Length: 374
Image (cartoon, rainbow, N blue to C red; front, side):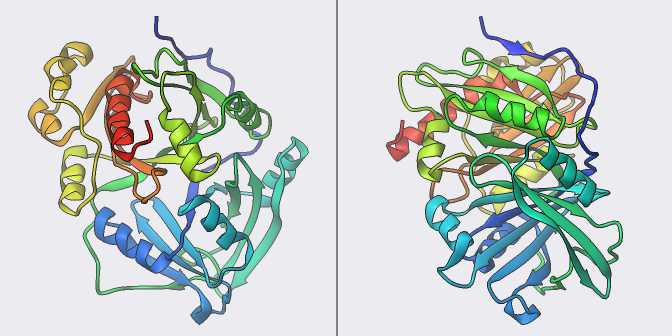
């Protein structure tokens, strides 16, 4: 019998309050071209730039925004240093999932006291718009969490960035905010990182999925969802499980050369319109067999949407005790089969689509087989 566990709700005991996701930073081989892709394909707006023209000599960064989502795409200006080594090892990928806090010094001190490994001590960055205080701690692999305090800053993002406008302004596609970010870690390491988020940051285990829930004929994985007290930060953490063939987690770990962020889920209020626009701009999604839609309403019950456009676009549906959700997953957005995006619309549901796991992972396996990696 498949097991989906919702642990007894713990009292929120956040180590420090987190207001939400401040930004997600990618380290990439060519930030200018990457920025153009996310603008043209996903509807992000270019709002800021940092680089040699602004006095920063070793890197160039492009700030992209849509709704409450901020992406920072950064590339090194040469082959030396940590960033170039990160890109050589991992390819393009997520380096930083930054927290927005009210007191960065206090948050950093409490995290370090509880066992976090420091990346950056609290550092004050200033310009004529005020100051931002930023610190950093490590999480799985080479990924970090910056801790960002911006209460005394009046500028659009942070010192060092110049406000940027462009005549090329593709319309947004309706993306609102980061719903959750999923990490893949090595076999046997899931509980280690669950403990990290629990002990260091005070998160609690919202849901757990065993290898019977997340499995197909060929492969399986296990997952636990960690969240902070206000629910604005949710981090599912996956590890591979024994199966007949290579799981999607193992494929990711092989090509990313270690643990990292597997996918970013972004929310929309109208998934049908959002996905239509993304497809029209060239974003590729996993395909779901049409037979899925023959019985999905028997499983989830009545929904507001017509099933026909959901079937046409390949949008999945699932329900929990609080409502239902609609979700769809892109193919990997890099040549290495690593990071992808999830588009999600919540109609009350607080879960993550457990009823869709089998259909989703069979679709992923078809793509793995095409790549020769199953």
